[in-house]
Length: 261
Image 1 (cartoon, helix red, strand yellow):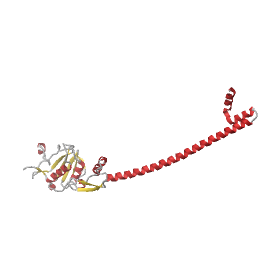
Image 2 (cartoon, one colour):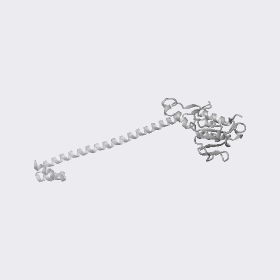
Image 3 (spheres, one colour):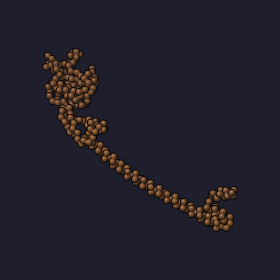
Image 4 (cartoon, helix red, strand yellow):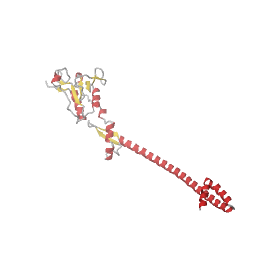
């Protein structure tokens, strides 16, 4: 009797291939080799010729997404990957250490139960077909906006792998518009702050200039008064007293300079 991969796993493999058409299949496996045939392996055909196990290469696929799809399906019995195993026997999704000969790091082993090996139920749900947030962001990233593909669209129509379409809000445009509005508000606020600071500085500089002008005027007035008084006093002693009062500590130095002239 010719062997075949059971219908449930065949559909599973086809769905995976459809979603990741360029995935690596080097470590894919169905029917067991000679070593498997010497053991009670599910890679060996059962009485009706069906093989109830499929190994999927881990390169080029979203392994967590595939495993999550598998453990939600009615057909799956257990999954082995990266030295761990989860089984319907104790609860799919609960992982335990796997100590078999192969660590199953290069591929994931999927095994189905015979009672559901002919299930036609899809493995990936409608939610799995939807673009994830990071996929939508990638489609509307700066690179695409630079090309002008999606930047002005409020909604984007996505075509998903099963041929259907889905219309979703252009979250990138909404984020861009919100950012532009925020930056505009920040720049407006900064302009107001700059003008207020400039006005305050102008006022302070005006006060400094006014103070300097007052000081110069006062000095000029003092000079005139000193000159007038020097001419009014009669004796050199009186003139010296006047200069000493005006010059303070520098009176002696000025007197020495005058005596040298």
